[in-house]
Image (cartoon, rainbow, N blue to C red):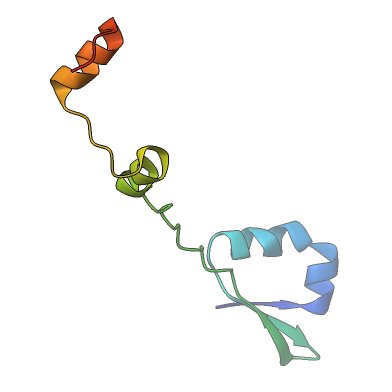
Length: 81
């Protein structure tokens, strides 16, 4: 862990921020006593979006009606079984 005085932070803030960006913890001192600690933020875990429920979407659109391959081809051509 690195240490930086309040004066260091005021005058050299980019240097202290570079330490934090590198994952280093920084203890802030005032009159040689630690008064605070700067700790880098943990990266947030990425969440995968849920997969769509295609069966539920199909039931919502078509109900309980099911199609067979031959029936779909026939309907495209204008024939009915």
